[in-house]
Length: 201
Image 1 (cartoon, rainbow, N blue to C red):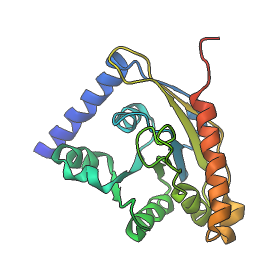
Image 2: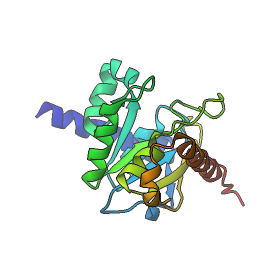
Image 3: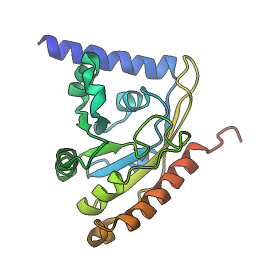
Image 4: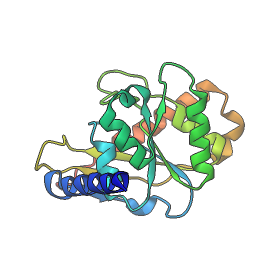
């Protein structure tokens, strides 16, 4: 009972923060399927960009997060509420891959940040190819999204979802690392394009 009350309170707090503090807006949400599996991939700008999206999106999203975050008691509570699961970025994490494939098999939405860390592109970090690899193996589309905003209080945050990218025809190439890397770089380029849309025109 207490856990249910606590989870409801956290959801309300995130929702209020979205609407009032960060003035969060979603563009292109129609590109996210309502009753089938998909992977959403975006740029990672702040620790709050996943919780903010979870609070106002009309579908449940199961995000993959680096295992180090689970050292935090508060994060573990939030993770249990939203179904976030850990991944070890230092190796090929077969358990995380299995969890991802199970989520997609259940027609849920899987969330992955290919940068692997906040502002990874700016830091020169090579994008992780796990999202594309999993999409190829599961035969599900990837929906790219770009996040604009600093998450400073009372400034606007905008999530822009692009059209789904279909990787279902490449299942037999999921073990070709060079090919998967090429597709991953193309995906990141699309994410950056969505991130940089100028809404002031």
